[in-house]
Length: 204
Image: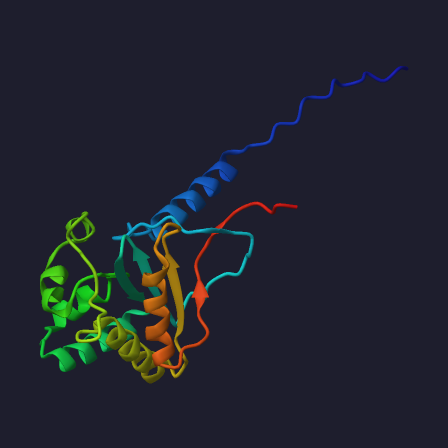
């Protein structure tokens, strides 16, 4: 007697669990991501084909644009210690709350006399055009050199490592301004530093 063949049913895969996992991962990455703060001095960096990544820690960045100079250093504890040293040198006392707020500022461009006012602003107002001008760097009031020196000492004191320096200059910036920054670095025996550029395609 012939056997009755049963029709094969189409196999169904329940994707509910996979969708749940995907949405959970997406939610996790969104909630844990750190939003990039707007730069107070955006610059158009010169193009280069070199692909060398800057270090994520123990790094100070000097940003130059329109003749203005901004300074920033990685590490909240290093920022606080550098601010304390600058306050001692220039006779400015900072409260614990002001130090905590300053630790969240990645880059700034004001003289020490205006630092308390800058710290008091919220992040949105702080980065508005015209709020920050530049860090003094002339021979009689070279606060930039003091920031570099104190940040180096703070980095060595807290993490026991040497601080690296990166110069991020606008592509149209005049050479004398860049040369002045290099002279300040060389006066502190910093002869090796990074130049931040934008990536472009190879000519070959």
